[in-house]
Length: 586
Image (cartoon, rainbow, N blue to C red; front, side):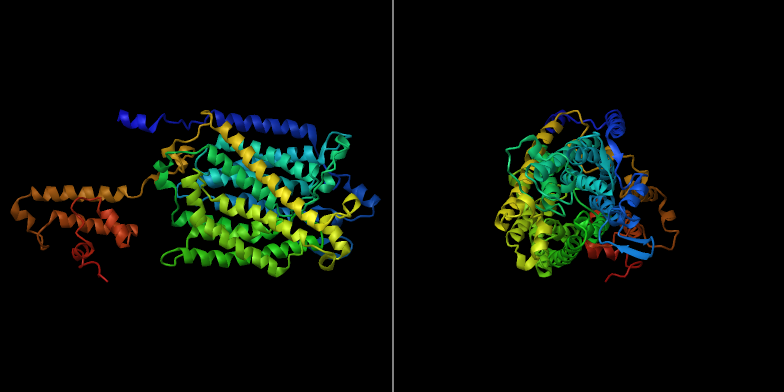
């Protein structure tokens, strides 16, 4: 026993009764203080909106809330009107908390952790994101305040998405305290990366360019490096960054003995079904995600349509490849849960562009193939050669499709022309005005590609740094033989503990009963009209009865259960022959 303990190494302590409450309380109190100092309502959410709209000849329908929050709102101002928008905060919020949360419940013993920790870090992350993005984008230099509205709230959810994607790569292997640290640095890195692409490189992303308060020229007048890119759905800034951020952390936190939890690193029928709920929520609402902060009008409308079409296309190719790669043509639920969403991830950057409907179909078609191929071949290769343990396969759903989406956007931007967009359309989509009016579209495509490279670099370098911070043995992370198990951090219902033991207990009872009968006088054994008693056969009979009650009707499960009772299994035909008076053998 001592040698075994030495071989396993020092055991980790998952006791977080002090660390987790301390982190939650201290950081939430810090949020309260910082919000009190910096955060205020913007003009459209302030009570002075009534005066503002009268002064500027506006109505309530001009309030950004009616365009950004719901999918559909009925408004009756002066005349009955119905505002119908394809995107809104409500849809994005459901994706963040329900879609991402339930998608991570596929592990058979980590459903609580998947949806519960997603809830925790998203709730903290959106608060921190409002501050970080506000300091970089919305800080009023005169008052020193951050003025927030519904658009800021949506951007905060987008910012959280990067950390939730990283969580997928670490699922089941880290403590909730470590996840809070991942979110703290993830949101910070996201805001800095976004600022570099939006401001230092002057990338116009998801409608935030008009909120920037500190142009680079005010600080460095001689700097002329500008990108002016577009990334409506965040292929570069959200998915590419979040995917490589999580992968870098996972690589640094490599666990050489993770195979000790191999029996829990998988799904069962019900956990896969719950994960599919998350997939369907994400699939339905992703058009809203990619168009939520796009420019009102044709840009938002086009982003919605392109994403909608790409999603449909990726489903068919994912199903086709999943069946093709299985020896017997069966479908793998992992592919259906994840690869069917890859088209929307890759469509994020080009969503606003005139990529055409058939172009969207091509993107979805290719991403379904690439993502499924990644789950079948690339992920095992990366784990074996690079020691990269990616629990949810974010490399195949977010990192690679996000990177390719950025480069697809670069190609589509480089081929844009006035014949396709029109002069005003080209100005509107790519902000070709002022000092950017004479920029060639080939140059524009190069800047789009540069923005993608910035996201990859931030994800990899930032993730490696955070990974080394999380290696310190102070975070309460689980041991290698206790990963992917809710028992480490959650109080579980008692019935979860009981699966096969009742069968064994029942059969042990019958064995002892048979032994007692052997001790009875010979004449007592034959007083019953039944045939002579055989202890071994009785064990088989009672085992079969208990197994039928538990629904273990397949021969493989039946054999596995019966092998646990000595001398019981004689082969399927011989076993069932002892019960032919009860069960008809097919």
